[in-house]
Length: 334
Image (cartoon, rainbow, N blue to C red; front, side, top):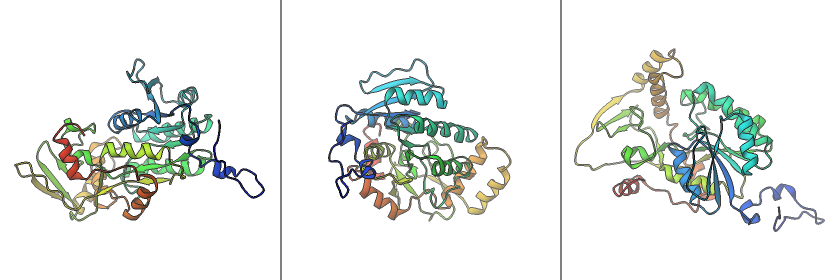
């Protein structure tokens, strides 16, 4: 590896701390960076499209499918059972620079799965950046919301703080995916029955809490574009990376009115109490926990920190507003 413009300390010695912060993209010119991507559904599809269309990257897709193939010069598929041994082998054989997880799994499986991912990165020769599967809202101020995240993601964040020596990591958070404002045929994001405030299939919207709680939204493809910029950032990653488009008032003109119903805070607390013993796989409990997440304001990434990170990492990304997303959806998939 040939490093350029090495920072010097007094006396002419190399400042190794600063060397680590020199962008690989500017100093390793012979080939694109390989990014290992675990999970290519929903957000993963946007990540795969944006990274593979960028000359800076090659994407190594980790998949449980044994015969998965891609007809693309910058995408390779690698069959895995997601065990630490298997992922470690793929990271080393591909020379991956970073590992991104969008894997969805039962809450009980989240920590051991991602512990294996972290261990594989630590043991690998080159993969020293890691983005675990969070993709949520304001987890700094609300680390235990939604409730399922408090049982799975929060414990793993502590593991990252304690055991990530040599591996740079960040949890990327964006609030809601803005894609839920358009139909299923317009986005890769799967339909969330009853969870998102607006249900296009039934033309209903649900006011949870007072209706004045802050929310934030980011287009799924814009999240992928932001990750592409973050992967080559010279600056050290923040443990929590945020992006958002703030929602004030959204009016959707579609020639028909939405029906409206309200779920008060007491309604939601009653549901949480009623379903608390049903287990992590209970749809009723998951919905109630999602409602609690919404009325707490935890879906909204903190505005000032988000602005600072946008200026630090994402100056090359133009984030769509909701109005722009709806206009784009009129002409096809977003």
